[in-house]
Length: 617
Image (cartoon, rainbow, N blue to C red; front, side, top):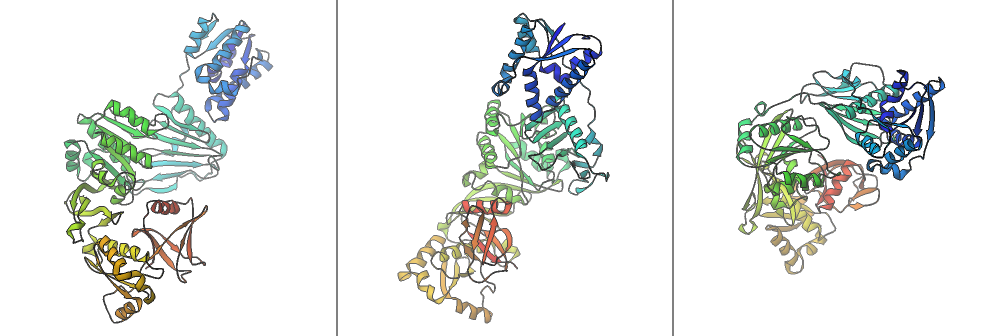
């Protein structure tokens, strides 16, 4: 009997199995070259099905050498375009033509292929797809009840992150033997095979060099060269499952979430327990009669069956959002909101009336809101996010209430300075913690508790920066500023620069005073030295220097005046700390582009924030 197998039965190993069982003993197996091309392409792209099929072809050759069957490779090889159109049936058609040409029995585990072949009058035998019991994965031996993640890398000993939430340590798994390439490959193949064949597993991402799979409650990333320099497997799973009752402020948060659709940001550092809290929120909302969906990439939240989990549609979360707006959920959990596109999608869905709960990385509670600044219109922020929940060491550390009010910002006195102000209040006490508003065409975030903790309040710092920036534009020399009161400042410049700062008839300094709403007294630097030596109210340390960054193809350069080589300084944007640096021999600071620091600095430059270099105390 003549036999022609298609790719599905070659992958499953069905032909060699039947030969060994004696069913196909002495038959001729015609292997279409199209099948060889397809499985070769799968193997080259790192897919386990390709490797399984190649092993089956090798077994058939061995059986032919033993004289048990005859194997012939026939037909046209599938071209690149055929492989690209495989899902449309291009390769299937080539394989059917081979079966017809050799008057052979056609074997397939593809029901569509079988039905089409029958329609063409081909002798077809349909084989039910194999169901394999793959059981526990080999890498699961490294997990215990307190293990959050397992890290396996070629040439390294197995490592794990283990411990209680908030006290996780990165440590050896207990096995001192380094992992070789064969062991890593075995684990990786097992993960991919399981993800493709088990009901409670799936492949989330499959690209050259990277496969991400969800297997039961584990998210497993398999990376290989050239994407990574060596083979590596990272498996992560939740170690705790919580409910809203397990957290501080549980009653208030429950009431807040149920009172109306909300915009909530769950913030915290990596490993703080943000996603665990998001899962508790999702199940609480679902249990109280809300339709809840999730948007995740990858899908790894451990939620109940009543919560449907969505990932990117066509590679874009915006398309997922469009689909969800048709479904009209009451709440959507967005894990995680990271890039500008994510924030825009979150904002669009919230403004469309969907309750949104977003998970964001932030080292301070206020940072979650500041990540929205510049990405959405300032006045819209309270309509998008009205609640910030900050998670630290697995518990709710801080809850902020976010509202807009038209008022004079704290610390300013003139009534004509009234403007829309975003007030960020401590949810538990109602105490104002921050104000966010536009000051001299810049968005600023002012902490309100500084006035009680230090002589120079957040508003004073802000005023000082703005006065420095305005005066620096009128002079090339050093500028130092003292804030003497809510609406009064003293500016010190070199004696030959005073006339430039004041301007003809005092016009320039008057314009600055009008813009800032503050009275400015201009003096010489020599006067400040005298005042400081005599115990006057001036600031004894040198003021920060406003710099104009130079962006080249490789570096961001911050040029400094004077001989400051070797000095340790802080770089700030609108008074907010960015990083600490040492001034180079050339009297400037150079930051290599592409680094995390450079990206933060470039964002500040793009937003036209004032870059200041101040001495590091």
